[in-house]
View 1 (cartoon, rainbow, N blue to C red):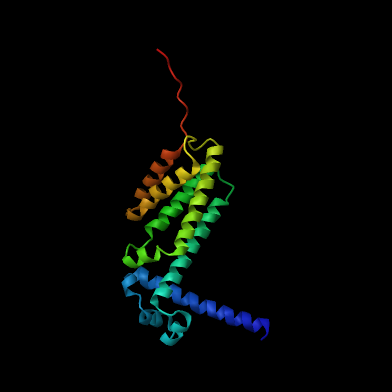
View 2: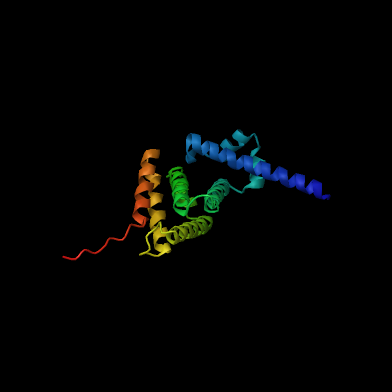
Length: 197
């Protein structure tokens, strides 16, 4: 087959796959994960159920692919912040915390979501996320902005746990307060001089 024909077929397959995943996302956002069924996706995409099964063997495969795509997008966004060299390290760290907190708030708290978060793609993303935060913390420490009495790995784990707590917060203002507290916990403080008697 000519390359152009193969590219066109592959592009069509990607479009159909994306339409299926987009439909799962819309249904989840509007009605919750429990409303995502093969019939609902077929209706939303106007793709026959038989065609759905050509792309995905079952509903779990669709939900897993959708979640993998979401995690990939989140990691891409956070990596872009990491590579933005225009800001000082602490400002980039703050932006990364805000992006991560927003992502944490957007997570669905259902059993299906918990199952999806146990997948190997999530473990890989968590390692990558910890590495990104550790590198940003190291850069901020070198600039004298972050405390130096703890290792960057420890601080990264602390920050991931602290900022991840945003999943339970209801407002952006509450998220901002959480980030401010986290930043203040890792910020370098001026050394106090010892005053003798």
